[in-house]
Amino acid sequence: MNSAPFLALVAALANAVFFMPKIPNAAEPVMSLPGADKIGHTLIFAFTTWAFARLLTLQDQSVLAWSSAPAHGAHERGHAQLGSVFGSVRVRRLLAVIATLILWGAAIEVLQSFMPARSADFTDLLADACGIALGVGALWIELALAQRSRSRLSTN
Image (cartoon, rainbow, N blue to C red; front, side):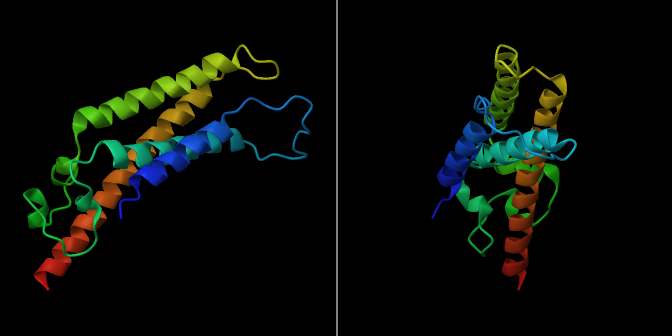
């Protein structure tokens, strides 16, 4: 079963909840962690990037399989190099996901500048970009681990 559509839906819902404007007259947290907002931005964008990249950029979802399913091309060699791992990724689509999420982060900041009790913050956009990089890295790690697992199973 392909979980990519479900994960992308969860990511979209997480974005909607996290970035909704504050409810007027809502009680503020008594104590918040310093930088919690930036951590939230980073984690939400990392998860969103990873989920949508899994859904939209993989040429074949079977590259995520950790079983000994038949592999093709560079994946048969079992090398966890950047080129061979990302060989199953449609690069233009990945760049489109990255660009879309950067624009989404910028749009959030612009919209916040027009809302009462909110303000645009360039450091939020930097946290979003860090999250995007982490999401791409998470996809690469997932693909590399799956590829390595398949190569170990096929040699045994």
